[in-house]
Image 1 (cartoon, chains in turn cyan, blue):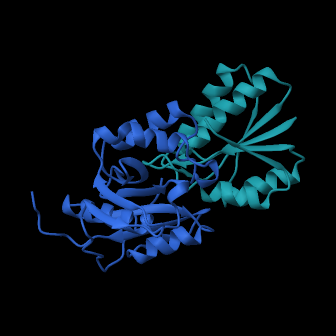
Image 2 (cartoon, chains in turn cyan, orange; image 1 turned 135 degrees about the vertical axis):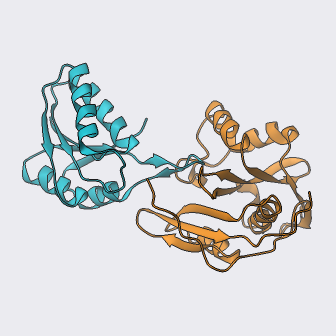
Image 3 (cartoon, rainbow over the protein chains, first blue to last red; image 1 turned 60 degrees about the vertical axis):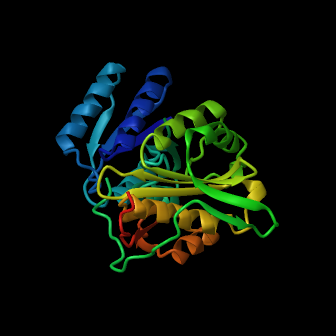
Length: 123
Length: 181
């Protein structure tokens, strides 16, 4: 399956990276990683890319890494729907101090707008 | 992740501090008290039997062991009050520090005791207790479609502070009471 992982640098997006890399290493999934510009994340793009490369190396994957500019949700949906991806994988939300799951803006936009199937990763 | 939170300019309160005793709409004698360790077992039991349909954003978690670890975290810091029916916990409201200047609020009433006016007393007692301990800034998130919950929060002064995602974020500023301790 042609899988597109969207990663913007929040903790839940890093969890999604581990999940997708793990899955791709045990299936025939063809993984592409899209690094997004998430204004809600404190991690700079270089740090995200380093995390992505480490995860790919750890799982013996040779996945394509794309840097996506502009609105993160809109660009991810555009890429997935426009290039024949069969699944979008994104983080499943951050937890509040109370433990409540809070689904972020990017995830909401992607879920509501993508024609491609979306997986929200929970750990 | 979230930007600095907004709080209403006008303070709410004062709210009556626990203990609070009243008769609910079903004629049951209900007591609201500050949480103590002796209520722990009953509190865990309430959450272990909590109706899955009444969960909010993943809490309470499912299964007794997950409930226990979740309670370990939230009871370990912050402020908690419980509603008791004949010494059995039927409601719980909690303030958990957010690591910044505020506290996050959550409130749960057991399914057998919902719709009987307990939530309204419970949240007031929690805010009264919090204010007495110096808490000024309180916020929460709630699913946008949950209008009974939103109405309850508005009734004690919460205002919408962010509508940017699935959940509505609301906040309140508490009037500071004279310290009693």
